[in-house]
Length: 170
Length: 172
Image (cartoon, rainbow over all chains, first blue to last red; front, top):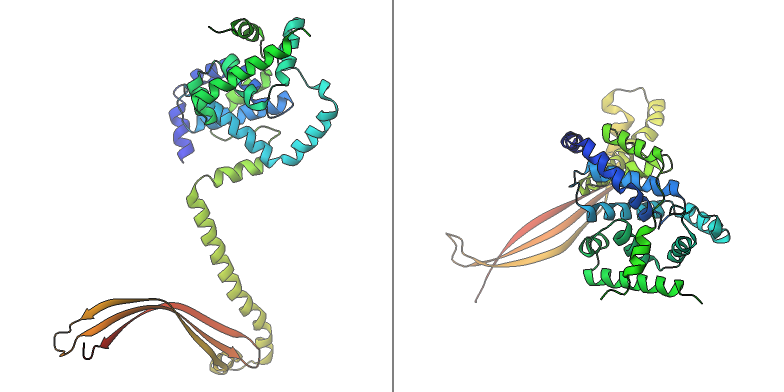
């Protein structure tokens, strides 16, 4: 019943929601890729999270909550499908080079940068993805991850420092 | 001064891979359709289960329903297991039926009374009494048990009780 009411309320601006989704989708999928190895799984997470977010009648501009929803959906998926995740990680551990790229093809320096990102600790990469490709503020990141703004900013700086170190010519 | 500005610029130049066109179609369909459209690869059963458990009230209802089902079946099974024997044994009138005889053969087998809370509520002065009375309230749980020696079946009834004792106070 509540869902139905929410659907009716949200029906007022479905076009707006679609527009927002098309703008956010690449960043959201990139964000979701942190928990799963295939783009297909990441897309499933994004779909489920976005529809859930819409059904709960949240404000369309509450990006912190949207990313928190994606995150919790991904973690739910991992929990309820942990066996599959273990199987996948075991397989992917042996064949890490076969992972599909998360970024569009670019030159060598961009490839090196994308590769360096793979080596970042998860908590730093998470903040970096939210900040660079999803353009969230530190306040929004802090809210989505339930951490302080200072922690979010620190993780971002650590991520950049780690990337810089990784990319230095040896 | 931000010494990472060049790196940030390089990162911004990296473009995330575009999601498939099916994703946009699936989301658009879900936004149009009030029925939940679940992704193919996710477990539908789990999703429905989670939605059902979203409200804490549902858990209460489930527990209540489970308790009711357990009580119902425990009573019903006793009836159904005895019925064939009873019917085969006796075509007699209801007053003399095996069921009635069985009930009559249930004999008291035990009674327990557990006092789990006592509260002294102080002195009480009744209107026409010369002495005050002390009012003591006890909360107990009583269990009565009957047993049918022939079949070994037992019947147990438990219920909470509350008792108030008025104790005359002497020489205080």
